[in-house]
Length: 387
Image (cartoon, helix red, strand yellow):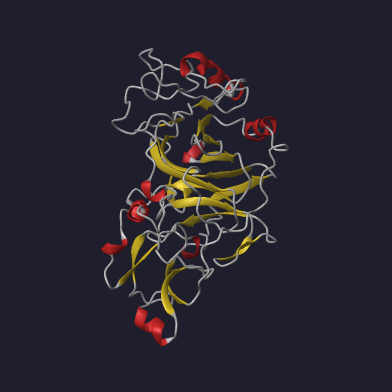
């Protein structure tokens, strides 16, 4: 994904590395473009933004109300951890507490063992999706390999499988909310979400003794934390979905003509999102590299190039399969740059020696991965992906 224009990293989703106590403190507010001095007396700088204090909610209150309870108004979390400067990403909000506990990492779920989770096992896992008509690579260059496979059935039904090369914290895909400009379509989006447990609590996460589930959800229009939208939508009659997970990999499968009543535009394009977490069981942050927004052309089997960016270049599909545009020019993310493709050797855009494979040299190899199943193959160059 060497084309900087087509890989627009969302500032508000990036990990913050500035020292909140040092001279870079002002830059620590960069994810939402807000600094503490911009907050009014009725707001508290928390989660990189100015949060209002006048909501009718026991957790959101004024300093005087906290003082009456002999408590302090602080940027806190469901786990009663506090961020004095408000410059921490996560489920934080203004609340009354005397806690001095700093933010701590969520407990890790069992992680993939590299010795066990081999490339050949991954190839076998995602190749079990053979039989679909189309295939695209959604992988961020610093993220885990993620492939979307689908077929368009009768009556506008999409049959799809999203395979992710990591363990099961959560995995999701669905419609972007095109009106959401804060989190690039996430807030208000209709999604299919698989989680590895039940009885969710924002303080303790999922109970992993409960069975895994796949349901449809509508992400809250303004609040990102899962506790604000944890109730699934009852659409059992209109969508069939399941989850596959091993000690190494995860996939969700679904078949429907809609998600929560929003129909797939199988004769055109849809704005879609996907995200995954393989670290914990709190259904929280997906990190900056295991999520994206993309425009998908269902019937032609490609991710659509954003308007104005390399408009003459088309994503390689099984139809042309030669790593060239219709004009016969090699596909590249930037002039002179190499474009990584999925290959049969290891599926990660590298040859056996770990060197990048160019579109000119290896596009035929990419097309051959799923050629036996008639699956269209998209370059892993990030065309159309908005991260």
